[in-house]
Image (tube, rainbow, N blue to C red; front, top):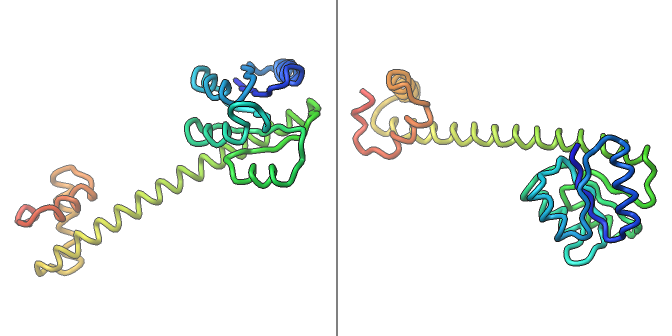
Length: 190
């Protein structure tokens, strides 16, 4: 994987780089959150591991920004186990919270879990989007049927008229429903 790490402590940063490279990953290292965001835009990493407390842009803000602009698995790294930091982290699109020092086995496990959780989250988001589109289409078709029913057709006749027109014109039903709602003269359906 291509992994972006950000830590303001050079010894920690070099240790993480060495550990991740030994695991076979390509590593990009940033000294602070602002640099991490710039590197993320340039290198398009597969994952980010961010220290929480850094100058300029902290790891929490960097994680929030990455979650919105470049979704990827994100692990937060800290030497602090303060409850308020943990609470702030739980509101972010992260996939793990590691407390320094980190052993290679713990890092490997955290990376594997983060990848899996991120993939699941992405799949759920796509499914939710598809369901939202289906619901929007159904609402549109129902409104168009209602308009046709006002002109004297039964519900079944209205739906059949839209279906037949969609088939004949080789157009999606949603497009036909939009046309019905936009037109005052519905003669095109007959």
